[in-house]
Image (cartoon, rainbow, N blue to C red):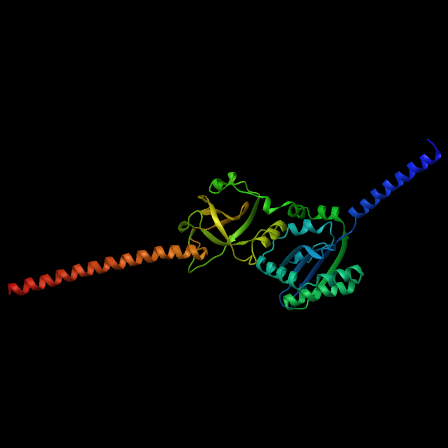
Length: 329
């Protein structure tokens, strides 16, 4: 090999290595910002909150929001370390899911993502803390004591800390199909790809007991599943996550616990699993309610007709008796 050929070969290898280094650099680029914050508020009764926000710089959007709210002081003791906090929050039970869901919705609507990214890029930590603090105070309408940390991570680190986010990327609802013939079979044959934990929406006046509903009827439920993939899918199901309609596809009675396990279908291969007490009145779809009410009304009409007929017979008997008695005298 001549000197020029060796030189050309070395230059080619250097270019290849440069491409590998650039590719490696792109893969390890810290495109995500993790914000960990804990706060306390309240004078007489102390309340605590923990907030975890993941911001994607490229798409300029919130990738994930985790929130805990409550009076449990253990929330305040959560470690603000992105490698440690997940294990700690998994041990805590959030006893105020409704408030937490409401808080998260308002935060997503009010938080200025572009301003947040700009402050983070310029490393203006104090201003960034102030922005998050201001948003939290606007939502809870109280001043808070805030402790906050920020960390930049790459895609690989994101997958390690939040493995559930990989599930969201892999779920394509358009590619999921369900054989209609299997919709009323047992749970094992439903080919469940996504199953969400739910609770029924109660309607004490117009609601229907589970015994009064049939397979195919629709009921209102609320998604209570705390997994991030569930939040993402819930966003796809409708604007009002407090009341989603699901079609009943399976009902099983647990004699030992004296309650029903109900499976509802939202969309092909998206299901909700809930537990229903026998005496609980569930809010049903208006169409279903109207159908059931029509049945009740028909029964009332039939009862009224029977009453009229009986009254007419009794009145006829009385008139005949009066005539007979009058003739006798």
